[in-house]
Image (cartoon, rainbow over all chains, first blue to last red; front, side, top):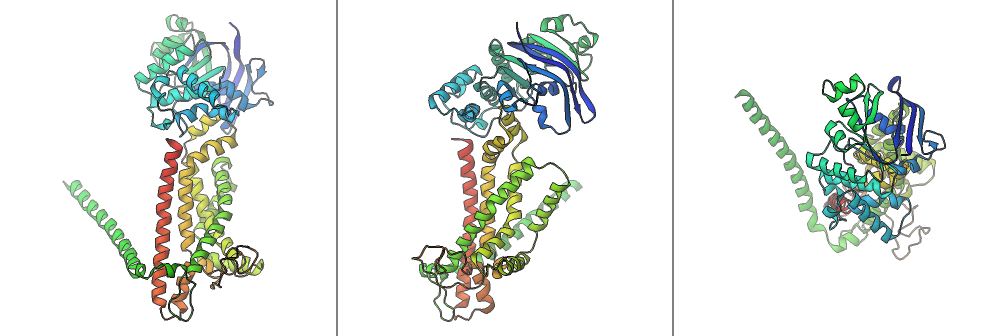
Length: 251
Length: 294
């Protein structure tokens, strides 16, 4: 397996407060990696470092390296716009634009200058199928995306990310605002995508992490405690803190 | 028992107060409309005003009101839009921007007669624009700018940050996120704000008395060259608007039917402002539907 993304000694400060204390981690091409840990442990902060979403927050200082293929994404020459097309993101709250389902999915493509109606139609069908929502919305593509249920909205958001054909998809607690049935549908979606994309998901739900991920990383107080195959982490963790957390002794 | 009783009394009082407001409003509206609507006719709406005889209309005043409104919005809208976008999307939270916000607040509570006198000294005298449509449009801009800026800023602030994040995460730049996502999403409330401010401009008198002037010279409606002084489009001619006309005939009108003209004009003004309000609601709803659904 080849490595697609590596962080080296990644530190992040909110003002003077150190939120990430030197994270070294690498992600392989394809497969799902789950980031787990108690609230405030830095897992979401870490996730947002991977496509530079933390740039938008004032007073944040980041040191260290994030290597994507052969380039450091924190190099001054990096085009964040291009970067975020290659590393897409899905958020906790479903956030479709207040436009039609169709317009939501083709948004990134339109901005990239794609005008060809056939190409757009094809991309909409492909992305919505990949996000496992095509059958539910194929007859009402021009209905407002906000009219859908939360779970459907979230899958439209996933389709919106897939339409620009990223290599990596980051999910920031993408199912935590959804009901169990919708969460399950999203999980199935992710399982279908894991052979073609690098998926990195932050989750509070340990059952979910154990169900869908290939690898799991445990964060605590801004540090990466342990990362390994998911089975290893849940069956036979190497560190005491990991064991305490997954057995529910804290967090 | 006691809490329940207090609640009942409070509810009763609140209903009473609300009813009082509605009654006063309806009485006012009803009086103006009942007095004025019978005076409105096609002749009244199109004929020029007569200073000494009965039977004059408000055609030129009506045209002036709309033309001034159009010019004032043409000047103030781009500025307000830019300022609103800057304040909500770009401005850092520091002393300079809070100073700007305070200034806007002070400006928006400025009495319009003060705006009028400022316009007189600044545009009419200093810039030698004279009593003209242009001076009036600038004064109305000063009057309208703070309110429109705030309503646009508020419309933008109501768009949730998760929308902006979604834009950034799709690889949009800040400018693209603003122009392609935030402004379209806020467009219905921006339009509502514009139309409501149009209503305020349309009914404004004090800011115009000393800037656009109190006379409505005869216009040649066959001449649409804005450089001719008798053309309706000429921005340098003095232009009494409907609201100023009402003020004028009530303070120094000597035509025998002054009362009737005043009542009719007031009714036309109220109806126009009401139409603006309904238009704002309808347009806002319509646009929201159009943008969000089919």
